[in-house]
Image (tube, rainbow, N blue to C red; front, top):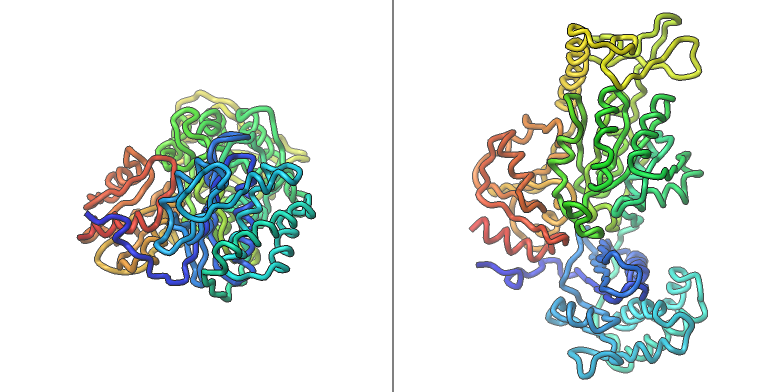
Length: 562
């Protein structure tokens, strides 16, 4: 069997830093500081934050990987590991590369493996000693790669604007301690990347805003919460109103009401919140309301593991809601795609007047990476509008099932109806009218399918006789595994999951095939088997709440293709 230790990274410039500690020790901010340091060196960066659902204590860590080449996910073998507490030391000492440096808090650990720093003693000289310990991460990195102290101070001041004096003084103490004990022993090559770095949820938010989003509704639920926070902070500049109702049920119903008034609306939640929205999702299908739902998955069932990642909501997203009605479900495989796909989805839903879902996971939603997007390339489609002055029929029968819209204020009666209705929107139970409305909505489903046949619906990366099928954020892990291991394979990633682009996927059902996903029940593999008859040679799964480590995944792929 091939283990992850049998796979060596081919990228000689790959450099990873892991910082671990308790909640309340500034671990996430430490990751941001390290990311900024790498960015200023012109390096591509990917930051993954691992944290528990705790305000204090527990174990958090940030893994920040960088290279002079474009990279697609984080790594768990680090050149520098900074452990702020004993738990982190025990967990991460195994994550070192052969020549890596392991720093630990010598006030908590005696005679540990690596370089001890008396962090607790050093931090006691300052206000908020626990929180200031996070500054250790950037101070250690600056010292071991030979960055001068003035540059370190400048970076600390920019990342830690509060308590500058204390943060600066503490960073200098750590810097000097590291230089005294190990010196500048690691090389870090500068690159030419000039892209900015964004978390996935911010990219989704920016994509929707670029497509004309008017209003965003959400009740906070990890890992979708930061979309709400982003709009609350930047909505005025983006022209998007952020609304935080009292429950997920209110969120979905208010979003539907907003579309009736002509506002482009979007909702964000995770699995448990989306479960509460099931009735409203069907309501959107019946009234033909184009609400975009962002479903950012975490492990379930029930509360599951609230702050981790998984792909167990695929079947849920594909089959949400009772009754028959069209919907579009799409899942981005990388950050730039999250931007453009969210924008496209918003326009598609308004074109066909039906609800839809952007399905993603914590690994994309809350990780950050370098990216470059152009809002001018966003495709927007205006909905079909009613032009007559009298006799408005909200649900007018048309060839493709899409009825012209009009919004208040209007001289004509506008009826959006959640019960079965006739063309005017009046409630009906007449058998011929009920059947006719079913046919009308189904015609939209066929029209959506024909439109997707003219769109780019499947990403294909690489080539070779071995084919790897994956989707969503797991695509990041797969692409990074192949990039760093030199494995030759073709990666096939459907962007749309309902309707599934079977006409494209069937082109790749050949030879040895592998499915990589994060579902214990193999939901994605089952979908491909049902829709395109795929019988994979191997299914590689991970379902412990953590994203794949690329080198670990590369070992499993090598084993599968032998």
